[in-house]
Length: 438
Image 1 (cartoon, helix red, strand yellow):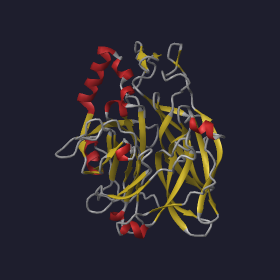
Image 2 (cartoon, one colour):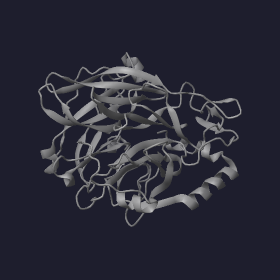
Image 3 (cartoon, rainbow, N blue to C red):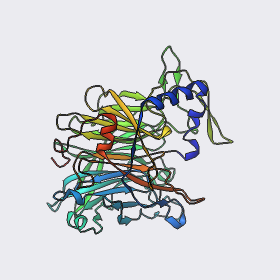
Image 4 (cartoon, one colour):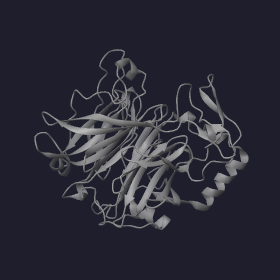
């Protein structure tokens, strides 16, 4: 996610015709749902511990699904754990900087691995976190008994000797071209994390490894680079406008484990589909509306000044394309959900086939709960989670939590019933056809 001041730069320059087209599309096609609950606000200042919400993951309890928890990242604020009512159960600070001039830990994305076997022989569930500040991936074991009792359920099991994901020296880490987006994946060969690189187009595949003392580490298997510039219809090329030296980065990612397919959201470009082992050729599933719009970086304002829209972009996503998540059904069907950060909506695509577009929705304010704006990360599950979320749960980061406090950036996470989304878009609901532990 860019700073809020840059989120709508390209959209502002699409011109009156482009804005009219977007407004018409919204009027005719965006459905509305409302949150059932939310987490406490996180404040990105010294008094709030520099906590800035980003990405959630829903951990499913093995025997008492109503005692499942949501694990969420808060950048320099570290990691937070919430119950299904949104109450905080635990806070784990990000690691301190190793030296006075070095970057501290900064937790960006989180995903889950179920049934990882430690060197001790025990099996544990892991919350896997990208630490963009330190260029590491970190691991936290989840204790089901503590979760059921409403006690802090996470324990750090990261091997202290884990290597940098992309860099080789601390000075490179301080430049912050580091581990960014993250998604987990497993097949018959083991458990993996796919990690993107901040400010570049790289995506790396890490294989997780049990290490002595009940710890968890990793090694990098391979890395690919997605395109940084694109050939436009009718000739000519386009490079998304970024600060000098930066490329169009990837953050939101999710793996369809049944198909061994990775979906990756390149923020200024769109959604890619590729093999989860990072072999083969990526395919661009959908493009942001601003795709192809030329831009020039203005160092005085530190913003991009867009040119004329050539009209080759997509229709369903407004940059940035952000968090991705999959709703599974038992027949191999289901849906890919994507955060369209630039217009505060979520686009829905078929999981199967060519990922046909289905529709869009927004989480709007209702009663005492505000809506979702500038969402970075989200996660959905079809598994029934107690009486409140008996048909599944969708959790989203809210980048502008209100009512706010003057001069304090306030973020949180919103919880939405799956059936509310399904009813609005005429989607399938399947509560027993798929389970992440199977």
